[in-house]
Length: 555
Image 1: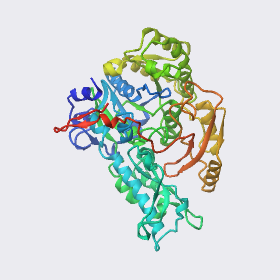
Image 2: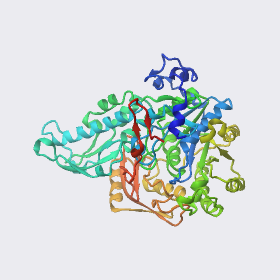
Image 3: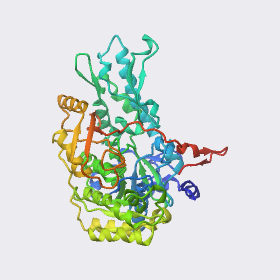
């Protein structure tokens, strides 16, 4: 059966019953129908957070074969609950871009899913729409100021870098010209669209501590300069209050359920290759306030989502993870070892062994933060005993706990060994988390630390534009912000064709964007785009709905 078929077989519990498992009653939550609810910020308890065990799920470098971090995160939370540990899984919301593009959905798979699957994958509770509207309100206000002859800040349109956003993959909107049609239709200028998941408003929502912090961060969004070279921020346009008003419900985390009827909190959805790649601080703290264990995931490989989770989110929110689960598949490692995508279901010990250096590098990456990871092998039917033995032998040689996880097929029962390893790691108190760099280091040092220590690069090169950006950052006094590097997820390098564990490569920084509201800088490497495109045959070709409202084709 497809993931959607499996999801439709499950009889959902009323969301008030799920809330009871967190010690909440129906008057505490804000219900969106029978199966979804918002959680108010007043439920966050900093004292309880200190005693909660935070578990991060990451992975090897992604491949077209898929790795299954979300599926693993959900399955692990089910397994921990089966072992008597009160656990909540806290995840990001899916973006419609990947849903209708390549991925087709992001709610887990098989018997390791969060529900209601269709709602979560589509509009859900409207959070993305609210973020999109808040972002584009600022865009409209900026262009209104440029157009206005009175009550204007005198913004120089040539310096404005703030684009518009939409939650869809549409490469045709990357670069556009606006303001055509005469003097009453605006001032013509070149701009473009980013995908909503890459919006700074998304990043702000996911790093804000509360509504007051949200408004402060929105006000700190850097827009550009006036003709007199004065920097302009959103607060200068007096728009942060209106933006926050649009986000009044979106800033609250969403409560749903897993297939096995356990709580799941889903909130925010920044991509990890072009943003910070983790759910909101508020959602993570909400889960930690209401549970003894929280399982969360960070997008793509440990070089992207996990690095940003540990260097940016944990430092910003004062979070300390107890253990990191590193997800891998035999298919992915064979792909990194040179096997053809069409032949990944065939036993190939040589390709698997050649692909192990990618796993090895991600283990090293996690260890650099003072945490020894646990490896989870996301099992597929095509995996052979001989191939599984290769990874187990590798893990034993490197003194790393490893578990074969069959979460797609068996849900929580398939994650019991992994869950026990996680519990043992936490109870051994072996984690000694420390960030990789100090935020107060100069910008180049921070970039080069990540490039050399996490990616394995031999150095970094900066374009003329990037060097000009560094001067702008210094002039604005923003050198002490962390860096959120935009890089391809397909390789440890900035070249998607370099698989496995490449060495001797150079990271090329072509520009550095300023996200002063979010509180980080965005060095953009290689050919990274902040508006993805659709494949030749997008997933939307298979999605349909009948007269009774039954959706098909989501997977």
